Image (cartoon, rainbow, N blue to C red):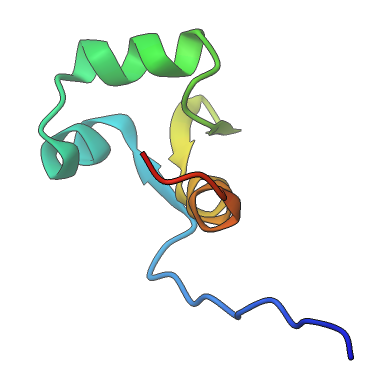
Length: 67
């Protein structure tokens, strides 16, 4: 039998960098730095670089090792 992946419903698949910083307690500079280094997924919407919450959530669910 094939294992089914859970369906995840998000309020929003992307989030502004400043809102993500507010919710995580990081500074906007830290969020921007993580995006620039490729540690935080992002998506450009028009002129604005947004945090890709959908991809971040998927990666978190697929992570197998707990530390």
